[in-house]
Image (cartoon, rainbow, N blue to C red; front, side, top):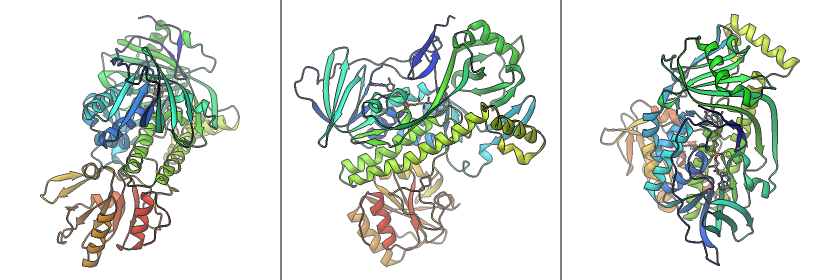
Length: 573
Ligand SMILES: Cc1cc2nc3c(=O)[nH]c(=O)nc-3n(C[C@H](O)[C@H](O)[C@H](O)COP(=O)(O)OP(=O)(O)OC[C@H]3O[C@@H](n4cnc5c(N)ncnc54)[C@H](O)[C@@H]3O)c2cc1C
């Protein structure tokens, strides 16, 4: 196998290798070529990476028309193997709603145990299955799978669903917008054309041209940390756990990551010296020597792909510029520690898709779209903060940072209390929204938290899942009423459901008679637990599985919560 010089692909510095054959998609000349007047499209998604494709699939599932353009004709980054490998429970729940979870679960590898070493001492470990916030969902805490597989499954699903047209080898070359529409200039192998759009999704990744053209302000930080991935297949399998070393004796006391993904391919990620030469550290003989130092000189490995990389962190000041919404890496870039890049791109898309659908259908006010920034900018900032912290732990500056790290490692070797100080990556979570204009915050309510895909019983006794309820509501709101309902409450609910995009489900307790049109049972209280409510409460769940509000009586507060969730302000009970 030969390795070429470093390729700059979407701002990550990767060495090209020939490990995987990615699918290619045909270029179909768009009908607009040759037309003097630009065609109108309500939504144009620019970029078909994991974020843009999730957005496209979410819109297609809701029956919303859009086009997606991508300058490439494949998934993943050409010549760069897979970037992402770990997908968190929230993403897996979203993928289930989108209809791509089954192939992901079949191809990927589940894991929940992580162990961290300093030298030969284990200094930290966790089992996510034992943690209350993970164990009730139908989806596991994590699945490891090559990012391009997920993207390819999404492409197939979008094509099957219809509504969204995927246009490969269509490159955005210029952009302008005014209060009437956005105008996009697009280049293809068959010529150029223009389209007008009401809303534009920038999912072009970390080198976003739109961000540059629109002069979007952002914070940026670049360190001198260098890494080199070796994706390999072993003859003898290491344990199926996530192992990380802060100080690996076999890597000059630098950090190492070891993780299994699909096709029995292991990702071994080695921290390099800050001045490492990418070409030298990715030479096959050097990579083999490094692997032999870790696994023994008799280790038998097939090298699938090698990629040295550096990273930077960035975060925009605003998630929207006029008609353009930034999402995924175009909105923020994080170091890979904790798998917070792709996972949050998926969450960005899930957040905006139902809002756009509701606004397009006239079910919600355009102001609802502003809550995208409230929620996903908070998430982006938090993810940048958390991953920067990890990066500083892994490559501390000389002085106090290095002293702190040495002290933390020394303490963790001897005392359990110090183990949480070890930071080789805080794994991605469903970010809570604590200051969204679309949520109603009240003491005791878990508004802004994600509701897990837990089990309940349908009226006929069969097991159901939260995702099935969300499938049923589409882009409507879901109101769960726990326990018995008074006649007055039922009449008020019927009125609300008749005038707003709201579906009401009574969650009957063991002794409650079923009263509402739709009712389910929650014998184990999982649904109540997931919404963090008591019997007698209601919970307003959004199409993205987030809790908008919860409360006790069917009164003005519920009316206000519905109004906020639909972007309506100034509504009185
Ligand atoms: C080593 C490494 C490990 C990682 N591990 C993980 C992990 O385990 N889990 C995780 O969640 N994340 C991980 N990440 C991060 C993850 O890979 C990124 O966050 C993710 O790829 C971002 O997806 P995106 O769709 O926003 O952007 P991209 O994947 O960069 O996609 C952008 C798309 O836009 C297209 N495009 C660009 N410009 C134009 C244009 N002008 N016109 C048309 N199309 C255009 C491109 O062709 C591309 O398809 C990792 C990253 C690295 C580097």
